[in-house]
Length: 391
Image 1 (cartoon, rainbow, N blue to C red):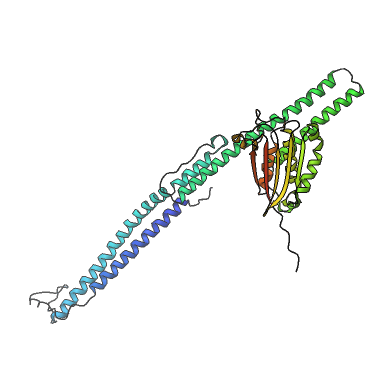
Image 2 (cartoon, rainbow, N blue to C red):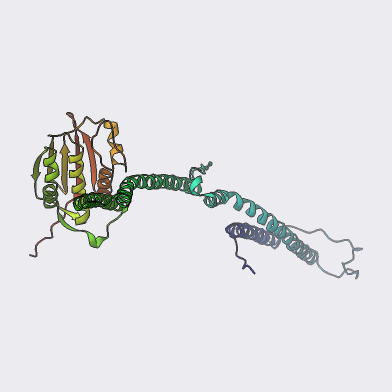
């Protein structure tokens, strides 16, 4: 048997009805006391009661007693006061009963009206699915706590809708990007198995090609994982010499830059950030790789690090095609490329990973299109505070 539990509407209605009933009891009680006090007041001394006729009889039918007119008036007055008090108690009891019924009904209706927005929110939450995230409550009425709650619920649905859309887009694009190397692997392996026996040199060439494809898959997978990572544990934040990290990544990419005939200029001032060393290394790696891939042959790359107040700045600029200002925001989205304006064959994850790493380091990221073509990326991170030496 299901255990009965009072509803919010029932508790609110009971509270309102109790408040109304308590008010009625206080009013009737005050009225009773006032009436009693007025009835109990003594008559003015200068008032002279009329003499009773000799033929009058008392209430019990006995012959009139030899009493003064004042005594007769006091007795009749006491009888009237007693009758009025008795009648008031009975009438007030009836009034209280009627008030209790009306208070319960009015409180129930008022509670239902007050809680109507909550019922709408509850019903909307129960109907919410991935396919119906576009629905909104749009509560009308006065601007109070309940309408603010409804607006907050609508804002939450909007954020969820955006998050689900981004998740679907990310999954679809990730599957599309992974399909190409896997198809290549499958085709090469099927050709090796179904074709004639290969010479040792052919085996080595095939193995080298497959190894490169696997390495590309590994890099793509690592980037996808980095993009999905949303926070850094406090224990993972340490002092990181960004200038040294950037210098190491430039040396690692020197061969790729030389193959394209790129000139790399560096101005690496000492700059210590507070963050995750691996993620900051990947940030630098992605910026440098992006500058090499999306560049003209025999172009240039400039990398700078320096301290600006309480922040450190990492600036990576490169030559390249002219970029439209309205397309810069799209470059930070996963799998986005400006095909007609940028050259290269990347996956479109580099700058989106940079944005994610900057966000989880509480940093700032700015993209600027250079007047003569190319892109400048400015990353601002919190500087590692030096501890004061003991005095």
